[in-house]
Image 1 (cartoon, helix red, strand yellow):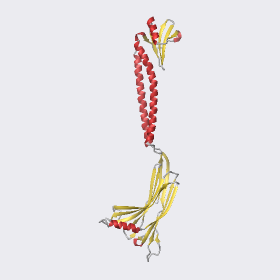
Image 2 (cartoon, one colour):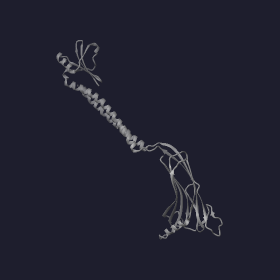
Image 3 (tube, one colour):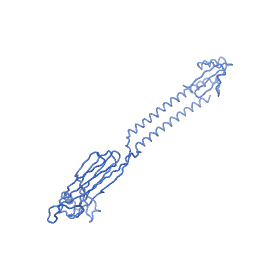
Length: 340
């Protein structure tokens, strides 16, 4: 009778093992899915942007008896007392290898930068003050694969020089300064790239004689790797919930199947234990074709017949069927049970 108990225990262990493995695999699948969706994003496309600004300037002169020309071109030496204004000529161009969804911001700023003049040169002097003025600002969606903005800005140096002198009067240290005028264009795309391009000029404000220098590169070409759109945490949680729900359904179905099988073997084990003195186990089924088979409807009827005749009840258990027999010469009384 020990075989029934061993099979029952073995079935329970198998069910528990399968459930644990299935749950572990579902959790690992959810973790891997979340990691892939949140952190691993494949390159969707590669986009090349080309930005350039053919920046130039003209220095317009005050009326004077020595220079007849109204302005001087870029790249020369200038005198502040002869300068009326500096006209910045910006010719910005943007080219993109293919259409994208993006916003652009076009901004022109004038920044007064004051430095502590502890040494003759300005490169090593620390910056102690800066003040920014916005000369132009534009922000809108980028609607084409190219963009060209050509604009001129008249920059009168006197107000900025007076601002620098007013600051210098408030501190008890020597101060030198310059005016930086920058044209800055920023691109911001939901396709996971952003880019800022700036070019400008620097005008010294602390000396009578000055030269104007350019800032930034004239042309910049950049390649962007456009990644797949990020997946929200809610999406990951929803997909994980679906995976876990699917695993739970599979476990429930598996449990139902095992419960049926366990119920079948459990009933047999109870019968074997209760009527051990009447039952003899057999390892092979009896060939039913060799006998005249009389089917019994219940085990109690078969037990009553065994008690009446004194014949033993033979028992054979298969994977999904169990048979109880009583042999009387050429008669075979059979009660069989099948797994549902």
